[in-house]
Image 1 (cartoon, rainbow, N blue to C red):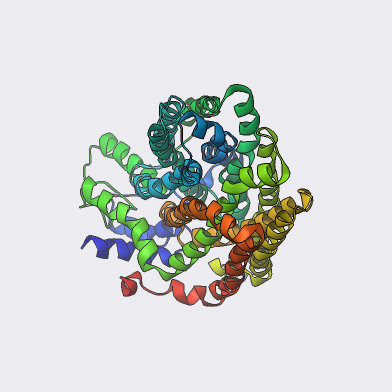
Image 2: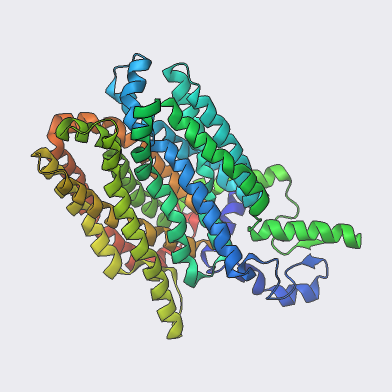
Length: 502
């Protein structure tokens, strides 16, 4: 019964382009028939996040972008100090050395399964506040670690708590921004989770060299702690069902009418809190296991994201051993990935919005597949293997380090083009379940990001940098047709019922 209810909601969401359409389609008719139904006070209701002033919207996006930048710092900021950690805790295994980095990303895989459903029951703001507090606490505990087991355990918990802004940030954007502005907003927000792992090691390398690896975590804890009062004081609730529930609760008390109910709780008024939670917690899993569109997109993003983390986890070893970079300067080798991602974000986010505005100007229907234009996606998919080939073979033969870094820039531009197009596409397809969709994507991509690097050093030792990266490039070549398939068959797949695949 619970699965049927959740699947019915997913099917309904698939047919919706905007969150507000869930209300507007039946608003006037339902209100005239049922005076106990609580909805917005007209289309211009100031409580509706879609009607907030642009300054308020962009302020919220700036705050969550900053939080989304801080938490991924924990994934790789201490990477240049891994050698020191291994010596201090008397570890020699290269697998453990790599797992020190990737265990944090493993937390990104499991945290969203709980974070997304909680945000769709209790709202976004509650999760931001609690997530900030837990992230800071676990970061302090990591800095105080006495052995490798303690460090790995608290880094995993850091990842789980740090996944909050990454999981629900896109949901907050969908709550506030209309579809034609969503791409630019997503670009601003996406800078955090993608630049954090690349920029962190730059500061981490010099900080480790000057003060030791523990100070990396103390600095992250201090910065994370700053956002605790900021999230309490400045962030507002944006999730429409929760806002309407709170409005309903106020009106019940003011009018002394216990029969009042929210316009978005028609199908769930008789559910208990535990039933709502069970339905919500299974939603990301159902999306990831029964909806072909989400399954295929998540697999594609996971492979690409896993390759990125495989490269990131080996930069310290490749550039120190192959080019003689010191513990401080090796952090600079992560900068090309950040440059490539920033270029990709600045290009492809606004480009998606431009294509939507063009269709609006021509009075053409707005469908999610606009985000998957082959003229954009296919070149991006081609850049992925090109960058890997350049990086692998130039590093193999010791060509000047600028050349393999250029290969990383090329790879990351393609990576951002692919990820921005696919994530915005799914966000437009499931706007009211943005957190659950993001969780479904994050689970697979974080598992790939955590597990693929574990065999990275062994793969490079066995095949060399040239053939090792060529193997990854050949996989990327095989995936080039996938974006075209998304574009051609996406509309048809969106119409399929998820129950057909259960």
